[in-house]
Image (cartoon, rainbow, N blue to C red):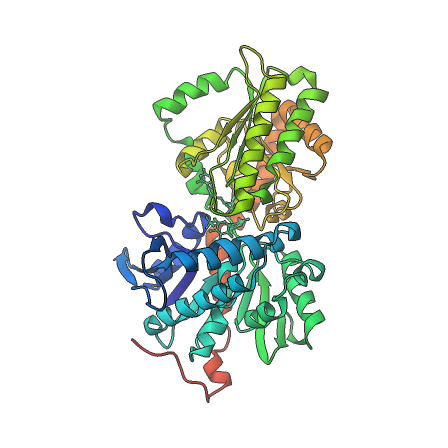
Length: 474
Ligand SMILES: O=P(O)(O)OC[C@H]1O[C@H](O[C@H]2O[C@H](CO)[C@@H](O)[C@H](O)[C@H]2O)[C@H](O)[C@@H](O)[C@@H]1O
Ligand SMILES: O=c1ccn([C@@H]2O[C@H](COP(=O)(O)OP(=O)(O)O)[C@@H](O)[C@H]2O)c(=O)[nH]1
């Protein structure tokens, strides 16, 4: 079987703290092991090198996987990661055009870093490798590789939503981005809505021909689009959740048992709907006074992309809101809202999920949201908690046993919280079983296998255009 080469902005280098790629790591690790694969990406480090000099690759091998990483210099980190990826594409693709801070210099930096990464990867590519590129930092990556003669099959998976034309067209370089994306052979999306939006954008901007179901021709390239909802490994989450409690959590368990517990956990990001959620919790305390003093909402929100202005603004806003709500509804012996601006180890998190009554997951827009799936998998099957889930997450398509809410409607969310807090055991078990069935069928292994099966089934570009040279061998 041909070797798999995975490229993502963040990679899970063994034993390195800044490298975490979250759920993605679990998903592709197995596939990489099966083919003695290569994982290439940013090391998470900022180097001292500036100007024209190229960074050196760091290559390590562990458990049959080769990890090749490269640091970014300060200027590239600012332009490619902070500015274009996270202050242009991220807000626009999550329907927040108001937060887009477009600057031509950042666009050029974004393309330059994609070119640079492609040049560094090229010598490592073997003729029969298949390449799987991840996420919005690397939309131009296939185009960058094609420019330097790589003809291998290259697939792409977008972890975040793809916006409809009204929003996408607001990006000054939208046509260039779309044309570059057509250099991929297979484009995978989290939901059918995202896939449709991509195709609709193409249809509006360029002549688009459908050559077979989900196989298109545009800008002179033939490519396939498909939907692959990312997931989790439910049995491994279950194991993490039911293992023995560390002493600190064991103590906390006793404290938690004095109240009904609502838990939320995500990166501190404006797409996750935190201020709106705080107001919904306030509406619960206001309109359902029977819960006052008897409910505790814990919000875990580790800092993310702290060098980007919009993330700093959000943090200040949340700190003020927490103080206001606790000031209003707290008492000398109860604090309704616990806000923790800290990162929690994932294994510990799953144990905490299991100890709570309600998982509150209300992003304003989210590609998938693995926390929603993890919350369910972590529950005790005999006495499960209830998931309250935003309809604007990819997860809402599958987690149909959750209480589905509109996160912009604080009264609807408050009513769902009340329903969740008072739901009987039988209904909770029935909803849990419905969702676990889906999680078991569509687990993370299924996600990786179906994607790679489809990518392997596509013809190589070299077989279409015999004039193009194959990738260089090392
Ligand atoms: O790398 P960071 O800038 O620190 O951000 C962390 C990751 O956030 C995003 O996650 C997305 O992918 C998840 C898995 O498919 C999905 O469940 C979630 O809805 C998305 O928001 C981002 O897409 C990743 O590239 C980042 O590494
Ligand atoms: O303090 C934290 C916060 C989050 N996570 C994990 O980070 C991932 C977040 O993925 P999700 O798809 O929910 O959102 P993203 O951050 O990718 O937008 C999940 O596996 C969480 O369990 C974690 O380990 N510790």
